[in-house]
Image 1 (cartoon, rainbow, N blue to C red):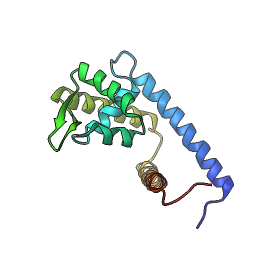
Image 2: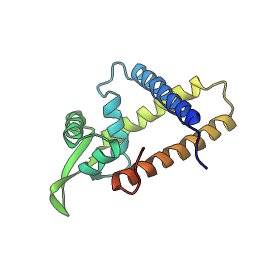
Image 3: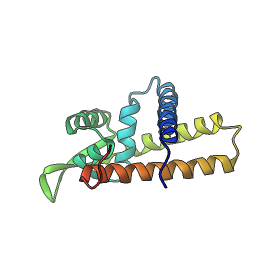
Image 4: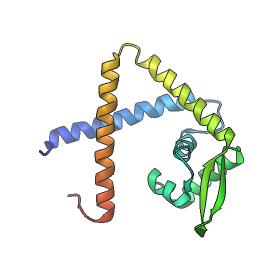
Length: 156
């Protein structure tokens, strides 16, 4: 079943509007912190487990030099460490330090509390249904992006 053009256009608009709202909330929440929104995003992905810097760059959709600068900033703050990949001496593995894990936990707790406050007039069912829908959307978009990158589907 295909999505109608008007529906797809509205969905695109709603996604961009949601991104703007989330960015505004995130920006307000980080005032006075040494890690900005971009660094917090990198910190979150690193927090999912030690991985190669190149893999992180792909997952974040940024170039290797951009990621390298972000990692250097996080490293300077003592939040991540880099080490040589034992399987490939040219590659680096990135992981959280204990301080980085604590900072990530704190950031996530603050964001959770803020979202609970912002959505105080939502029911648990509304929030759960929205989370499921967003997860489905995210998985569909990631699958399509991977297929496009692999050249197995083309966009009009």
